[in-house]
Image 1 (cartoon, protein in one colour):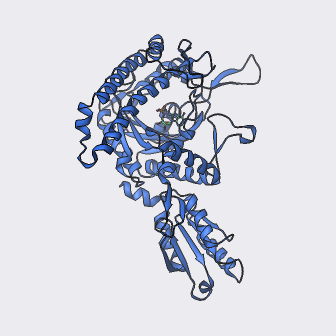
Image 2: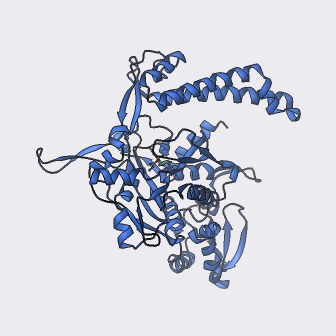
Image 3: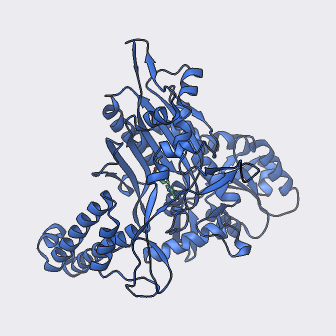
Length: 513
Ligand code: GAP
C-alpha cells in the first residue's frame, strides 16, 4: 500500500477510536487545530510522563517549572521573535491561495529526490540480486542529471534563506517553473515576510490595553525564570530547567495532520552550563535524547540525526532527531547549543543582571545553554505511525492492531466476562476494583469475545483477561497478549505482578540507565 494511503488510514483511525478529533468539528473544523479524545489524552499524558520523569526524576540537577502562556511583550522583542520569527509567504493571484515560499521550494527539491528514488526502484526491480545501487547512482545519466538539479537548487535555496533574500526566493520559484497546485498557474505575487506569533489585547479599556503574544515556544518562560529557580532551588551549574506546555504559531502551511499545528505542546529543557563547556555537553544531550527515543523499541533504523550545517547566529551547534514517518524522515526534536544569547538579551532588555556566581572560582558569568525541544504532538504522531499495523491472521481474518509500547498505551488491561450473567460480570468488576489503583483498566461485556479483543487491539491495549465459569471455581482467568495473541491461564492473585512491571513508565525509564 502506498505510504500516502497508510497515512490516511492512520488519520481516520485516530478519529474513529477516540485519539484525535478535528477541532470544532460540528462547525466544520478549524484549520490546523485538533482535540485529543478519550484515548488520545491518555497516550499524550503517558508520553509527557515518560519525558518529565526521564528529565526531572532521573537527573538530580534538573527541576521543572510551569510558566504562563502570556508574558511581558518585551520578552519577544528580546528573544528576536518580534523581528525575526517570520515565514516567507507568496500568493497565487489566480487561486488566491497563500503558500510558504520555502515549502514550495522544498517540495520541488523533494520532486527531484522522488525522481531519483523511482529510477533506483525501477533498476532494482530489473536487475534483482545483482543490483549495485551505489554504482547505478554514480553512473546512470538520469539519476546524475536529477542529482545535479537538486544540488544546484539546494545551494541556491540555502543561500537565499540564509540571507532572507525574498526576491531571490521568488526568482527560484519562477526559474524552477513551480506552479500553484490549485490553479496550475505561475501567476505569483512577490514574497513577503509574515510573523508567526498570535497576538491579543490584555486589559479592559482601549487606552490601557497592551498587545501581548501567545508564546510561540515555552523556552522563554524558562529563561526569564532562570534566576528565580537558581536562587530558590540553590542550583549549581551545570543544571537544567524543564517545562511542558502549550505553544502557538500562526502556521501558514498547516499539513500532515498533527505534524504542524497552530496550537501545540512542547517539552523543553534548558541546561545551563559554564561558558566554554557547552560543546562537551552538546554531544552528551544529543546521545541522551536519542536513547530516550530508541528505548521505545521502534528500531534504530527509523531515526536519524540531521546536523545543521548553517547555524542560527546565536547557536554554535544544532541537530534534529528525525523519525521515519509515512511521509519521510521528519524532525521530532531539536537539540541546540544556544550560547548565552537568550540570557544576555534578557539582561539587556530588562536591565537586570542575570549572572551566575561560581563560589569555587569566584567568577560571575552568564551561563551558556544547551536546549532540548520536542513537540508532544509530533511525538504522538510518530508513535501512532509506527504502532498502526494491519495483520493478516492464519485463520484468514485480518485485524488492525496498535502496537503501542505497553507503558504508553491508554488502557493497560481489558477485563471481559465471557457472558453477562451468572456472576461473571460481578467477578470481572471485582478484579478491576483491585487493579484500578495500579493501572488503567476497562470493562467490556458487549459482543463476542473475538470482537471485544479486536476493539482492544485497535486502541493498543496490551492485555485482555477473560473471566469464565471456571474462574468462579479456580480463581484463574485467561490472559491474552495483544501482539502474540497467545493466551495463558493465570491466577487472579498474580495479575498485578505479571502486568504492572511491563506497563509502568518505570519499565521504560530503566532502559535509560
Ligand atoms: N525553543 C526551540 C523551538 O521552539 P522549534 O524547532 O521551533 O524549536 C521545537 O520547535 C519542536 O516543537 C519541533 O521539533 C517540533 O517537534 C515542535 N513543533 C514546532 N512547531 C510545531 C507545530 N507547528 N506543530 C507541532 N509541533 C511543532
